[in-house]
Amino acid sequence: MLVLIVDDDEVDFLSIKRILLRAFSTDQVEVHWVKDPEAIDLVAQLQRYDICFIDQNIGHLSGIDIIRQVTSRGNITPLILLTGVDDPRIDTKACEYGASDYLIKDQLTAQLLNRVVRFSLAKKDHAKKLTKLAYTDSLTGLANRGKFDQELAFSLATANRTGNYLALLLIDLDNFKVINDRYGRPAGDAVLVELAERLQLAVRKSDIVARLGGDEFAVVFNCYKHSQDISELKDKVLAVFEQPIMFGYQPLYCQASIGVSVVTPGQISESIEEVLREADNALYQIKHKGRNACLFFNPKMKDSLAKAAELERALSCAIANNELYLNYQPKVSVADHSVCGVEVLLRWRTGSGERIGPDVFIPIAERSRCILEIGRWVIEQSCLQLRTWLDQDLSIVPVAINISPLQIEEPGFTEHIINTLAQYNIAPELLELEITETALMENISQVTDALAQLSDIGCRWSIDDFGTGYSSLSRLNDLPIDKIKIDRSFVENIETSDSCKKICNIIISLANTLDLTVVVEGIEAESQILLLPLSKRDELQGFHFSRPLSAQDLITYLGSRKKIPRASG
Ligand code: C2E
Ligand code: MG
Ligand code: MG
Image 1 (spheres, rainbow, N blue to C red):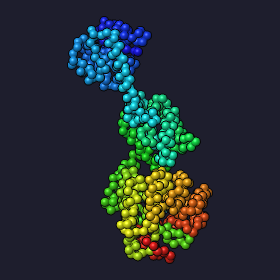
Image 2 (image 1 turned 135 degrees about the vertical axis):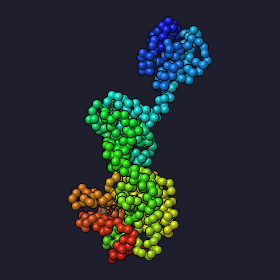
Image 3 (image 1 turned 30 degrees about the vertical axis):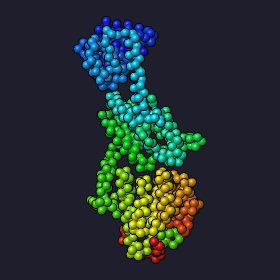
Image 4 (image 1 turned 60 degrees about the vertical axis):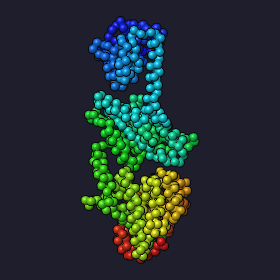
């Protein structure tokens, strides 16, 4: 045990040392002396010691003030105050300022010192365990968010002082929910534990790995001399997700999106919030671009993020300001090219007259969750429009609405649809719901329930953008799905790319096997249709037949076509 005595009086120091050596055997204890605490960095020194005795009167300094100072600077070594007199005021203050105990010099005995030291050390041990618990993620043993915030602040200060590079990586698992839903929580836990271990092995001891919550991790690369080092380390972190994780005999594949913020030596005192925001922004962008990849923040992102924030604000009052409206794009049947349905496509004309496409504003609406309100509005407006057409006794076809995964997750989603159909007296068979392949595979339990409930009453389901996500064939077979929409990126290149043509063929034969209707979207030319081995019940959609139209233009379009099927609802 290493003991420090802070006392300006050598006689007192020797006397305490003697009693200590009697209290413990000489090979158990080593005693050091500091005469002038102002001459050293006491907080730094204290880290080496197991316990420290501080005299109350050290020249013009008071022991209590010293204790207060070192405690406020993060000292955790037990401090015992020594005084010449028994004064209850000193006793209270010593305790308040962080001393572990308070002893009167001329009452010291070996027995008393032995007890006080043992109790103080036990208390410190307990405090250490509590601190560890408070700062550790219990599942993975990694630092938790509280600890991570502290460490990041410390790393940032060090990087600023030493002029080194620092990089913060925010890691978000792409398909963790699928693993949890499909294989159960123990599998999810196993994935988190394994990834935590791999991440720790991929970085240096001086770097920080933390679990920020759920399926989010963070890594801080500390003190690198060259930006190249960071790029190499980033590759090491990406490699962590390449190999499957074995859960029993089941290999689990878990991919990640990573947003990185780099603090360069010239960047003076960036705040923690700024570094976190930058990495978060990069993560957000990469999540929307394609996932399973890493993106470094760059200042240009700030502009696009500022624009997104402005759109987010404007979007929140777009419904109230009547800026949203719907277009309808016809779908035609392969058999005779008669119109067999329309897809509802949302449009936004802002107050200033700017038209913004759904590819831009839907992700923003999803991030701010105002897609929930907008989604409800789309359902209600579509049903209202359908009712108007039915009342006018117009030949009408099923209407397909795009549904965001967030809508399905929201409690009351199916009830809202059922109630809206009832309110406008619309047969459920006239409503088709489009959900993307990724959403179908990600939110397993909610999607399964919603699909089952709505298909039971007669609504149809189609999988949008098929071929861009990762589908489980057994799940496709198990769910009450009616149609698959081949993503338009494949059709776009079907005439020039052999692999796109092959993918289309595979999807069509898969749909045939599973007895599903195929909808091919993005048809811009007759020649594209000729390359597709479709059956009569399949459907076509694209500019070749019609662009998305207003409700009024759709009526004119329908009137201009020869074969118009009548709806039954
Ligand atoms: P989507 O559901 O795959 O819709 C088809 C998109 O392809 C539409 O783009 C449509 O205008 C476009 N398109 C159709 N035929 C052709 C063609 O021949 N060539 C080309 N180049 N494009 C064609 P749009 O209207 O910009 O919508 C984009 C996406 O926004 C939609 O993709 C859908 O995912 C989303 N979206 C649109 N409306 C809604 C909505 O009400 N709710 C939700 N959650 N998402 C919506
Ligand atoms: Mg769609
Ligand atoms: Mg699509």
